[in-house]
Image 1 (tube, rainbow over the protein chains, first blue to last red):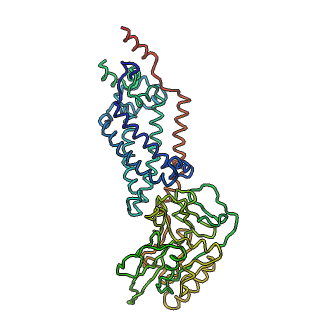
Image 2: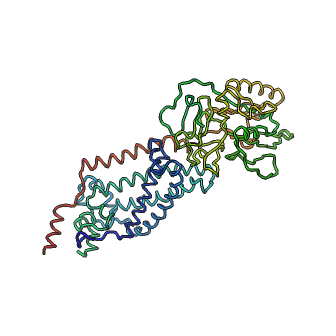
Image 3: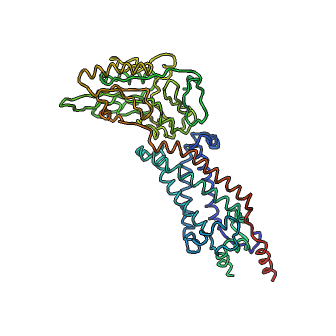
Length: 206
Length: 295
C-alpha cells in the first residue's frame, strides 16, 4: 500500500528484509557482547535465558550477521563508491551537523557521510568475523597468543561498531522522513529533493 | 562450590567489594621438586578426593600420564630429562594451578562469581556460575584451566578449598610419601623452602631457589627448584610469567574507556537533537512540489 503514488521507491522488499536481518542480529550481538565485556551489562544475558545461553548463541548470531551483512555489502557496494562531490560534502559536514544543509553539494542516493559509514561498517564486520572465530572455543582451538590478540580486536572493533550504529540510527531519526524507507521502502519527493537531489533528478528525470 | 562466603578477596566480573571482613592467613603449597620421586600418588589422591575419574588414556612412550591437564585431571606430573654437566637429571614437576595472587583467569572472566579468590589466596572456580566461554584460558599465564567437553564448564585445581576450609591440607600434600608437597601458611612455606634451598646449595646446586613469580604477584603454589635460574627446564615452567598486556588492555583500560565513549555518543546524539532540532523537509520544497502536481 503506497500512501502517495508519487512517493519514490528507495528500497525493495528484499533490501529491507536483508537490512532487518542484519539489524536484529546486530542488536542481539551488541547486547550479549556488551554483557561479556563489562559486568555493568551482565544482566542483559537474562534476555537470552542466562549467561550460558548468551555464550552459546552469540557466535551463531555472529555467523548470521556476517552472512546477511555480506549480502547487503554486495547489494550496495557500487552505490557507495566515493566521488569528488562526496569529499567536498565531507569537508563541509560541519554545516550539515549544525542544521544548515541547504547549501550542501548535491548528493546521489548516498551522501559522503553515509558512504563513509558503509565502508567503516564493512571493515568492522570483517575484523569482528575474523577475531570472533579466534574466540569461538566451542569449535576452534587457536594458540592462546592469537586468541588474546583476537579478544582485544573483537572488543575494540565491537565498541567502534556500536558507536557507528548509534550514529547511523540517530541520523535516521534526526533526518525526518527517513525511517519510513526502512519500514516500507518509500520516501517523499520533497525528502529526496532536499537530501539527495542528484538521486531525485535521476529517478524523476527532472 | 560456594564456600567461606566471608573470606573472599576477589570475585570475577564484580565491580563492588566482595564480603571480606574476616582476616585470614595466606596459605601456600610448596612443591619441592628435588625430593619428588614421580610416584603420582598426588594425582591419585586428587582424583579420589575430588571424585573425578579421567578416561584411561594411551601410553605415549613417556611417563607423563595423562599427557596433559584435562577437565578431569587437575594435576599431572611432568617428566623432563635434562643433561647438566654431563649428567642426566630427571626433573619431575607436579603441574597444576599456581593460585596466583594476581590471577589472569579471574581478571578475564566475564561471569560474576564464576571465579573467586579467597582471602587465604586460593583461586577457585565455581562451576555453577561458569558460562563456558574459555576467557580464563585466555587470561591464564600458565595454561591451566580446561573446559569440559561434557558440560562446557572450566575446571582446575581448587587447592582442595573444601579441605582447607576445615583445617585440612590438600589431598596431594596429605598423600605425598616423600614430603615433597608441603602445605601451610605462605610464610611457613617460605621458611621451609629456605632450608631446602640451603641444603641443595650445599650439595652443589648453587642456582637452587624458590619459584614464587612476582609477575603475578607471587603464587600460592610455589616450587623449590634445583635450577631456579632456568625454570623452563622443568617442562616449560615460564621464566617470568605475568598477565599478558593484551589481556590487561582488554579487561582493564578498554572497559571504562569504551563505556564512556558509547555513553558520549548516545548522549551527544540526544543533545544534538535537543539543541539543533530535527532536520525536516523544508515547507518551501513541499509547497513547490504540490504546486507542480496541481498544474
